[in-house]
Image (cartoon, rainbow over all chains, first blue to last red; front, side):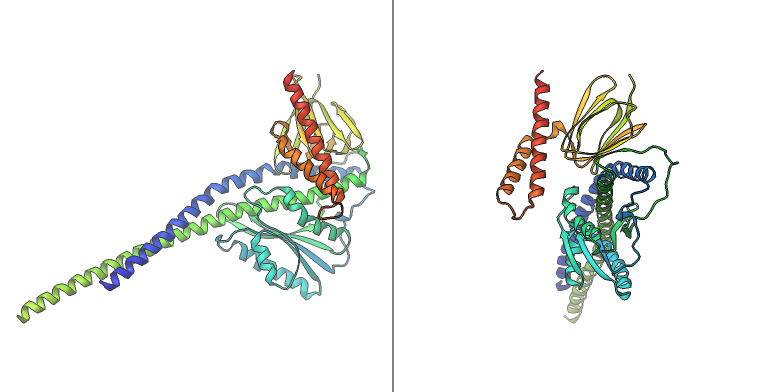
Length: 287
Length: 140
């Protein structure tokens, strides 16, 4: 029964692995819901601020903010990469990074330089190894990311853009479509893609305190911040969804493996018994 | 009494929405009281409280640490930077933040920017004031 004992230990170890993957799956399943709630909670802000921008756009046309104007030449681009802090989430991060690298390469081929800031440990670890300009990173955002945690990395990019060091800024994250599907996305953050006016023109203007420029500046900065924040929340929900699916298939695979191992264990046992019997019979016949 | 819709949101959460008859907030140029049919206005907010008076005369207070107030013919929107309900404010945390900001101001030019520390100090003071007001109201 030498083979039998080995198989038994193997089964034990696969069972232990299955326990872990099951637990991870269940933890992620419960976290998805909370992450989705948080995604939903942050939407009214984005909606209101978008309204506000379109109102200012309609009411005051003589002031054009740099965040809204396209630059003729692109010499250097920035990426804000949103990733998860932890692994075991299937191909979530690697798919995003693969797309990102292709995108970066197309810029570099045109002679455009690339700067990166990272949100989340996986991106930081990934880009530290590569030859790109890693300007900043923030990790360990936890289950409840706060906007304040992100302000540091965002201001690196926003300042870079305002001071004309960067000509475009992109935001990369995993878009949460549903539990089964997450899509890596690379959106242009700055200059803001110009949206068409949704409502009819107003013939009134606001009273600005202190003045239009200051207010518009703050509104646009907040808008960009809320876009990044939203992306972080989307990515968090995606992370849990991807982990849940990955862990579910891992648990299923473990179950299948245990079944096969059980079968070969039984076969080995049966073979051992049969052999023993035939030896006894053979021995008896010899006597 | 006429009313107007009011939305108070922060990036993290929706804080308040409903019909109100008055909104009081601390704008950058001074205190503002906004009643229905106010002229369109946009202003930045200073750290402080936003008070809304509901249709039935009750009033609610929310602490904001900055943000934007927008007045339109049909709606008043407050885009708060971080608005937490006043009741939830932890006095100890506010005091600690103040101490930290003061300490940072003491060693100028080091890790923290002076302007940032001043802003944090103003914020902490405003939080304490909001709490004191709330406590006074509870006693009555």
